[in-house]
Image (tube, rainbow, N blue to C red; front, side):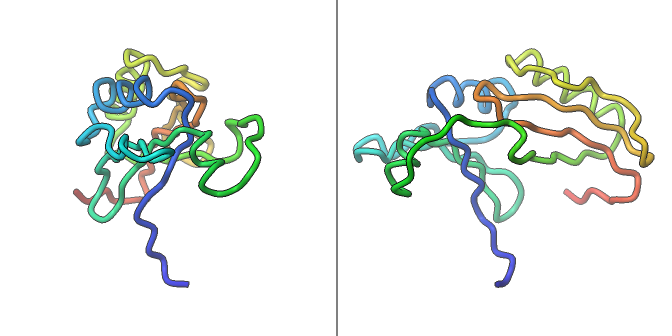
Length: 140
């Protein structure tokens, strides 16, 4: 399999609330909710980096589409890593997320491996790590 991941979809309970968090709170670019004319089709896409989008989609609609029975969500199933260019940028984004309504689970701190990171949860409990890794170069 060639690595061609183009969309990361997050299941949410309240599409409007999540749209507000990601668009208005974090400033991610989007055209808003699309697909409302289709049963189980309402979704919002956010442009991340070239070739990659974040989607938010109602959990019940994901369950319908995948023919799976919904289970209790767990925030420790996966994390989304957002790498930045400096410790200061980690602090700025953590503060922005907090103002947007995120729950800070781990405040930004120096890591054991020489980096700097913190964790927050979005309104649906999805876990994001904002991290500066001095070993990785960030290209725009």
